[in-house]
Length: 200
Image (cartoon, rainbow, N blue to C red; front, side):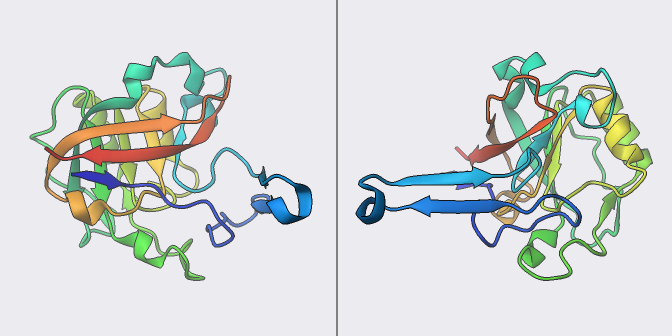
């Protein structure tokens, strides 16, 4: 079974307050003899992955990581009842991809999506570093809020962050193979990505 964990990019895609607005312009075949869609967007829109350089000056960009970094064994942990995310992560393995199912994505197209979001605690972030996980992600727009200390704890240890995931409920509590395919932008501090989970 293949589960698509990616938020669509369209006119309804939520836009972080203060960021440039996503613009989509479509040329159709009838008017232009060929179809073409023009996108104007930044690198942290929709489902996307953060590189260390997103928060740390001089740190690695996405193109500094091999493609193997974005493929691996994954697990979804249900933390829907936790405003401050501190789950039991004792069973995590070295190089795991770890996604936190918060259900916050249920509000993706509502005005309050960017409010009252659950956050990963610094304590949990440090445990994830100790476990040497590869990538973390969640179905929300951020794992923490300003001053983004959790971002920095993870990114300085080359643990990448995937934001705005969807459909994590379909893989909750399960282990699966995960593919995270960011756009191949040289020197990117982040990039939109297609994320899929394959459940045997």
